[in-house]
Amino acid sequence: MVFSKMETNRERGNALIYVLIAIALFAALSMTLGRQTDTGEAASLSDERAELYATQLIAYAAQAKSSVDQMMFSGANITTLDFALPGSAGYDTGTTTDKIKRVYHPDGGGLIAENLPEEAAAYTGNDPEAGWYMGRFNNVEWTKLGPGNTSGPGGTEAPFEDVILVAYGINERICEKINEKVKGSPAIPQMTASIRNVMIDDVYHTGINVDLTTVTPGTPVCADCHNVSTLCVEDLAGNIFGFYSVLLDR
Image 1 (tube, rainbow, N blue to C red):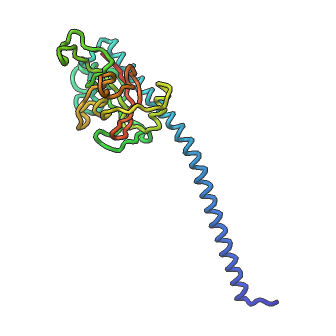
Image 2 (image 1 turned 90 degrees about the vertical axis):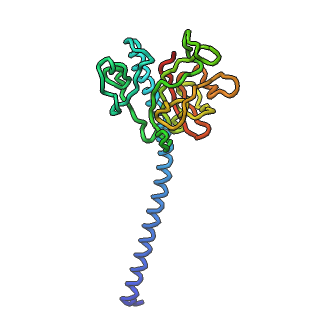
Image 3 (image 1 turned 180 degrees about the horizontal axis):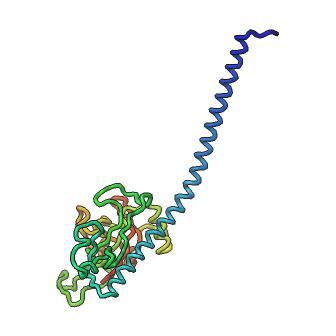
């Protein structure tokens, strides 16, 4: 049988189309398999990174406590501790006597002001933004009361304000990993008040500070926080997670 030149070209064209279709199908299959592989690797990596970030946050809280403790050993007074951050007004002003009271200043506690890793922060709001916050603005119910100070309700001794550090707005998985490490269970206690109002000085947000009650009759802010100086908790109303550490109690 004799084929015309036109028929031969047509068959070659059809063969080329089939080859291109085969290449496209192969590419699609490769992409699908690649995505499946990546998904498996990403899930494993996510768990590993959650573990890594949990360790990192716990280590920073321990470093912060060490800095504050060292300041106290050196004769600092909890009531005069200064939490001015580098770059803020008043951070590097005044005399040496002023600077030694500053937790983040080299002449004081020398603590490095860290930011939360981008992957570790899950909260996207700005009142306040996700990040590390430290201050003396709240009393934790199970900590000490002020001796001889009868300005509290009904003439009782008024509570001192404790120094609290919190990593605000972190990823839930990291929160679980933290609690696994500090209390042996990934369970996250839910607070009955906003984390920002309990754990962050209200100079940084629009809320109003409230004390961390743990055994008060009725509905305490966080019953599971009783006698626990380091824990990750959930803001029940806003589904926000925060890792707190009571650095110095009175």
